[in-house]
Amino acid sequence: MAKRVGVLALQGDFEAHQKALQRAGAEAVQVRTPDELNQVQGLVIPGGESTTMLRLLHAANLMQPLKEFGETKPIYGSCAGAILLATDVINPSQESLKLMDIGVQRNGYGRQLDSRVVQIPTDSGDMEAVFIRAPIILRVGKDAKVLASYNGDPVLVEEGRHLVSTFHPELTNDTRVHQMFLDKIA
Image (cartoon, rainbow, N blue to C red; front, top):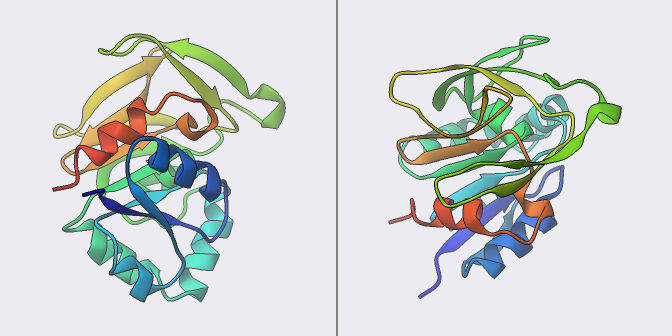
């Protein structure tokens, strides 16, 4: 039976994540309300603009339910989603869910013009990584594990049930990151 995974569908490229999860074998649904959140086994927070996403989470009364969800169920955050899962956020400082012991710098690689597509080495072979106004992970806590790096900076990190990437795997045909996340769902 396919795992039922939600994709936070308030802002960002949630449809691409939904399609990537489906290619990886999941039943992927869009989540916009606390009730819809309660009907999934895991959640993807897509890239987008983290400040806008925070405003929309508060407007939808999803901030606290999302934090509670993440205390028992897996969440994968890409780009802005990684920012929202982090404990510490700088440039500028902002609120977050504080579900992973990582510190991030927003727009760490520069502006939209500085976006790039690169190959990063992983245990399962090289992976195409699309960076768009990506954050940089500056600090990784003792319980977090770096799964891939780019230019010496962690870009794919797991901690317990959670996973983050500072790049956008949903923009490639490679489903390994989404499969990694699905493997975290009981």
